Length: 256
Image (cartoon, rainbow, N blue to C red; front, top):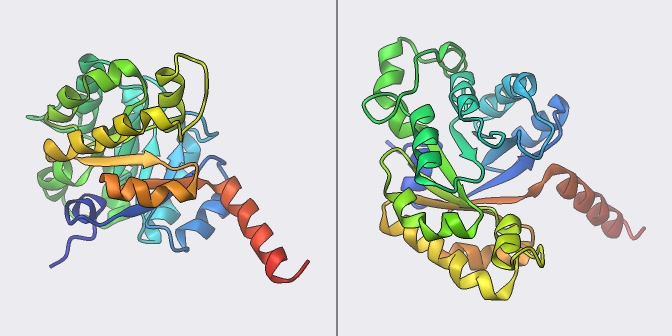
């Protein structure tokens, strides 16, 4: 039987596209949850999502059969555990620049013996219709996906060590911050030509470690190239941009 979980889809080599939700608007989340994207990512770092909007926003995402992903604020590994308890399939943690960062993130994401996540997934069990805690415990470490963001030269230098860590399931590239670091603060350019080999190598590092690779695409023309590099979890922009482009396309189709 096919595993339709995010972890199962990624393990099968499927490319999963996510919309990036920055606005804590339940109606908007509901529209996207009923749409064609395979995943919805609720952003608590630069987006306006908070604990309450994540708690409420995960309901339509899960109900719509989409992969439910949360990006937690910088250094808030405690929120990673809470997001999983609320029902998230995956958590993205920004600025994982040291092995200590990666271990702290892993420990918040995985139950013993892999990590130190404490028990309390009452809402996750309810939303997913899982009867009995043992069923969840026996599968949670495999089915919940931990994505460590590679955004700096420091993180890039130890990307292989981060990927090798048990309990880290994916490397996720933030190309805007990575371009700032790569250029020494001279530019924010996700398509910066001289960093593309490094971006490609991160996907290769993840694959070599048996892990997944994700990235935020700011230019849709770059997406086929990211897929060719080996990225299989790709954000196709924030909802504001998607709505704006949709409005333009409708007006253009109408000849307005």
